[in-house]
Image 1 (cartoon, rainbow, N blue to C red):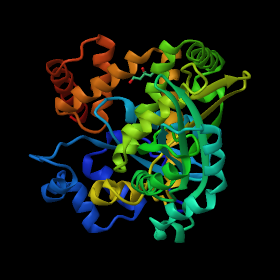
Image 2: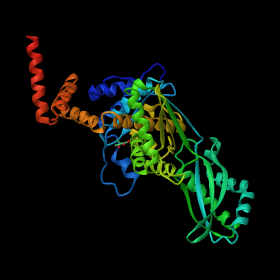
Image 3: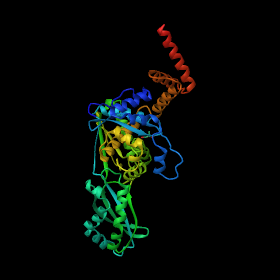
Length: 428
Ligand code: MEV
């Protein structure tokens, strides 16, 4: 993909076919893949009927492409599935700003997920803890027998932790099985292993096992994303300072932090859904991580020294590129191809970068013109398109409606009529 840029000015003004063509060229899509995009009904009802139970139809959502992303010096087009207007536009716009400072950089830990085994009625929890830890190799071996393929790929159960927790029903022993899940989201592999080791853990501890399930607080599977942007790129020092103050507000106040993080999740969930991943798992992990030190805090941080705006984000992102809907949903497969990702870790890092950029878009708008201006201008563009505007007409009609503070299809039609008759007159 070297040489192909994701910097595509005016992408939103193009027709659907033109957009598909650009994406197809960028990601080397085959004719069949392009045809699939153009059916607008990519998920066959027969596949859908096997994905969940009691199916009666499929449910469509828009899939848009965020442009301008430069992540780790590589250009990406970002597929986003979301019902909310402005998100894709805001993402593309803020990604353009980050390019001015070289884009977004990312790193991540190995894809380690935690399986929890709950042991109750353990007669001597402290001794049981030591007895379990002493038999670590034996227990990891039982777990790894469940998934020889994962082990062959370099993954598998790697470590054990034993926690003693005090509950309202007395002391419990909780064993954490740390599993490297490689390119999977990991829930299936981890749950199978947790169920396999539970009887042995119960017999060692002298207690009985209850729950055996993955933890969505995936704090061993962390993504980090950061960016350094010249303040001019976000509209100057004053706005950069406003972004920093917005972050400080969120850091001090959970009411604001919830909305701050919602803005991050606008970007994150849209890519998680486009790639067929479990967005509830990512949401649960994000919010639990945000509250890990006892108070709910923002997942990102923004600072400025007057010359640059520095943004960073750290959070768990448990996503896969094998298994589940990532394989069965044709558009999830296509989204992964458009992203050009080779590993789940790379996908998670891109998603983290999108979260940071989405957050920048929201905070920049809030610190400058306010969020409604952007919404209104996008809404006006949609109305202009509904009125029949094409190409450059869209912006002209939309801008006039915003200026007049009258955003209605009938007014858009009038403006369009005037515009076209002016154009005709200028020809004669
Ligand atoms: C709206 O979907 C998201 C925002 O509220 C995020 C924020 O306030 O930071 C704009």
